[in-house]
Image 1 (cartoon, helix red, strand yellow):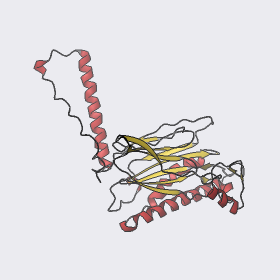
Image 2 (tube, helix red, strand yellow):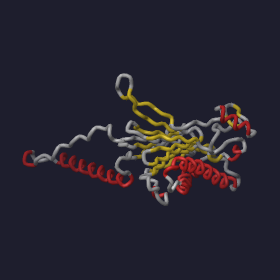
Image 3 (cartoon, helix red, strand yellow):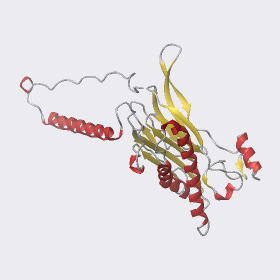
Amino acid sequence: MDLFDDLPEPTQTSGPLSVTAQPQTTKDEEEEEKRFKRRREDAEEEEEEVKKVCKEGLPVLRAYVAARRGEREEMQDAYVLLPDMSSCLSSLPGHVSRVSYFAVFDGHGGARASRFAAEHLHHNLAKRFPSGDPENFEKLIKKCLVDTFRQTDEEFLKKASSQKPAWKDGSTATCVLLVDDTAYVANLGDSRAVLCRTEAAADGQRRPVTLALSKEHNPTIYEERMRIQRAGGTVRDGRVLGVLEVSRSIGDGQYKRCGVISTPDLRRCQLTANDRFIILACKKKGAGLSFPPVSLQVHHSRL
């Protein structure tokens, strides 16, 4: 599918003015012309960089990030923006042109779990990324994401338990893996992924709508509470053991025996020409990406 077919044709720029038909340029005009040339050169360089990672017909990816520490003494959130993940992969499957990865991690109890996930999760993902079998690719991607989250959690818990005293950190995780024009979203906890898409309204005009790409995990949700109670845990004041606000996370070793798990929810979304951006965000602080003409903005900011 051509993702650019509903966009207007670019406007034609005017040709250069004839020097003989113009009065002598002033110093200000010369400076303005230099600035214009610099902007044009910068735009051409950016376009060349985009072409290196985006083949014709695929969305153009650009990432923007904003972050705010909030009321805590340290920034406990982390993010990863990889418009081109090919450098992490040993090789791309023959039917895949581009792989991109974007993630936001909301830490609690410290910043070590979120930083560990930001540093290691995409590398674990790259090691497990399917190398072939296009017929079973969807199934392999799902298994890859589930196994990657489990491995990253186990590695962090092992490191946390070896410390004196043991680390108590935990983190949410919301990740978008883009394979060509298909987005696979995996999330733990209460960080969000939202897609903005334009749809035709009753009056014939196109209106933006939002689509949830993630599922919140907290112990007040029936399925989550039942799992925690079956594991011997309790839910008080909407929290696990009256303390932990999320029911799935990376880290939080002291709650893993109480039914807190690291198995992500998975969703698949086929991007279309009507999609404008994705926002990845945690409840307090922020990160963003924009992918014109299909804009995907990842925001690590207060909801």
